[in-house]
Length: 86
Image (cartoon, rainbow, N blue to C red; front, side, top):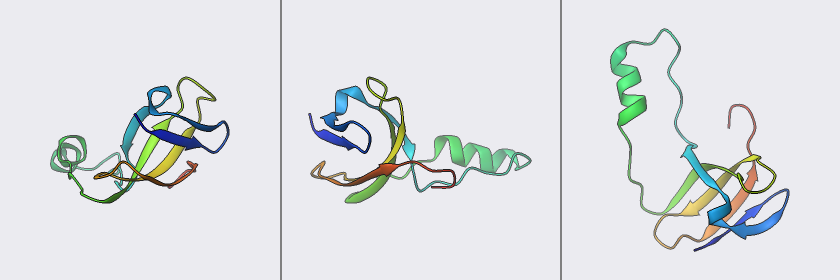
């Protein structure tokens, strides 16, 4: 278990959160071809080291946040409210 510092509620166990997605990915345009949507849906990197992720505080304020987490150590480097386009 590790703690995620919710910007609204303070540090909470990661069990209160739901992983959303890789915060670095860009959604294809609505009219993009099938190959672009296949890649977006199924092709994933498995990064080692610092990584930006979307998490939702489902057992708390329900806010979406962007967490930068080291995927090797699970150390949380930063957490901030998610904004459109982040």
